[in-house]
Amino acid sequence: MTDRQEPPPLPEGWLQIESLDIEAQGVARRPDGKVVFVDGALPGECVTAKVQRRKNNWEQAALVEVHRESALRVRPRCPHFGLHEGACGGCKMQHLDVAAQVAIKQRVLEDNLWHLGKVRAGTMLPAIQGPDWGYRWRARFSVRHVRKKETVLVGFHERKSRYVADIRECHVVPKHVSDLLLPLRALIGSMDAIETCPQIELACGDTVTALVLRHLEPLSEGDLAKLREFASDHASAGVQWWLQPKGPDTVRLLDEGGPELAYALPEFGITMPFKPTDFTQVNPHINRVLVDRAVRLLDVQRGERVIDWFCGLGNFTLPLATRAGEVLGIEGSEALVARSRENYQRNQAGRAAPLAGTRFLARNLFEMTPQQLVADGAADRWLVDPPREGAFALAKALADLHQDPSLRGTWKPPRRIVYVSCNPGTLARDAGLLVHQAGYTCTHAGVVNMFPHTAHVESIAVFDLA
Image (cartoon, rainbow, N blue to C red):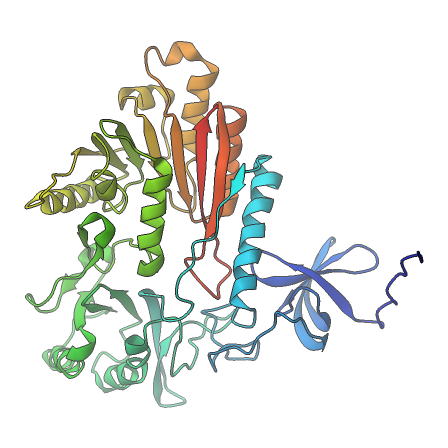
């Protein structure tokens, strides 16, 4: 047996990329231990880079040259992706093999759970994956009239810039939406409101392509006529115009009638109508699988009571109502609760097998207390689907009840919690509370690749009462 030889030292100025961080930057270390984050570099590569920002313990750098290329590096599909000036900033990982993207996100989840929450899942679930392209049914396109170039731009912002990228195609939105980018540029360029329409929001349903035009001034009759003509010319794409003069609550359909903006959850016989400014999942293919897996993991038995915290429009609540004895959906505003109730009543009508009894309540979920938790009643199982801020107050209230049994009386904690997360950091923080202070064990966890080619990490975790 021969001694293992150390690899030869790197030429001066070269960096060995060891891993990717959560922002999809390559991570290297200088001989003195200082960490260098290199945008565009991949694990295993040897690169040179130009430092753009320096701190005591780390540096941020731009990739200059790849001297030894990773086997995971692939040719980006979109011509607008890259590190060059003017490159589109909508994606960060098109240069990395998709399977490797998922593996890296899984490692990010595991690292966050351990380093932030000191939690390890008993079983890592297979990643939920779907189409790698054309998956993004929701997007927000910036609109900019560039006088010097005598053109209108419609697209995402440039990489690390406030400027709008000059994109003519996009491979993460559906093909029919990508095909609308240049016609939309021509449309805005022909309008009186060319300077006062800063944004077009996209929301696709199963049969409708809703385009929400943000306009800072009232639109002229001529401009309204042009919007109607555009929708007629692109009727095969299901184009439907909505107008938004101010905040999201002001959105309204340009012309009543026509097909409804909605998506289906066919596994449960549920149809979910929504407004284009409502929060719904970006990726409908993944959402269907996610809802099905969450319901299966929750393992609701007939007759059991379930609480769906952060219930939104009822994306999980309504499917749960096909399995449970009683469901309580809780959200942060009365207006959203009213929409959830309306969706429930609509899906209840005409069903061969009625949905379970379901109530909806409004609560400030970021100020939950043990007393409020007890007042809302015990449940056999919880579904928790918070925004990026996580569900700290909810987990803390549950931990307080576990630590001080006198607060809970006859109230009993849920036997199982399924937590759907869009931020591995806040999931890990809340998992630490649930495991170390509330009496739970993290039995399963896994990533949900809701946003291929981006560094965004969605995940799902299961907690059982120990």
